[in-house]
Image 1 (cartoon, rainbow, N blue to C red):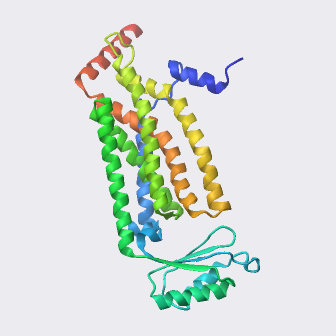
Image 2: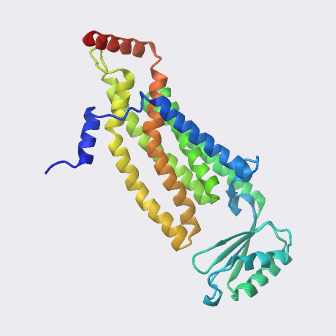
Image 3: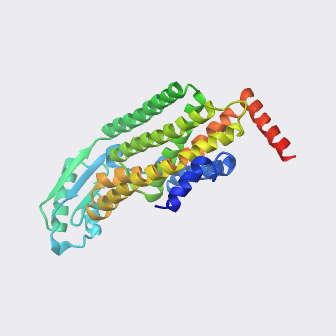
Length: 338
């Protein structure tokens, strides 16, 4: 049976017959990455009118406040009119900041600043009257608890990055691979968080779990590619016909099809979960975590060959032994060409 075009492409990439020049054209890839990161950082400033934190839609778990959940809205009230919820709150607290979202086909979630017990009781009664249902529950999350959640999330991120850096340095016996991998991880995190700022979707504890999960996926992909790079560069000898950068690029191309296949296989079910969670079931937790997973998977698949590997090659090419070997390879090529 004849090989498919994709199989032939994979074989050609592995043997070096065809190649995507990630290392040789790293300035282009670096420029793309820098532009994307700057845009991701600029979006919260723009949305927050100069206030970076205000550019994100933090969930009530982080900012604190009161929450009301209207369930089982009768069919006579469908489709749901969210203006009714806003009126129900403003009749009690005229200047309250209200965030309203639908939950599934017949539910409404209303979030406000912290309300007193009498205000909470009045808003609950107004919501029952507005949507003709008794299924209205209320809850309160204090700002202190939200701050604790934020601190825990930041500590978790810091511990993950530190452990990842130590693991990479010990496993590959070079801090340069570790540094390249960590920069790539931070690149993935910034872009993923930037998507949340651009879409206005809430950053909830579920989203934070998604952030940490995609960092793990990105690290896994980077370790696989770096392991191939180490294998190829360890075999470099005086008779090598490739420069260090070309050897790194060959390793990236040899694992490129695997990276793409893994990324697609991981992204498809996550995309299905995102669609079902966000647009069918109205399951907020599924939506929050799946957006982070989908964006992180796509970005992580691209960042390993386009950011991490070229960075590592850049860090190493200035070393005396590598520079000497590269100079010898280029001189040999010039001699053959002459």
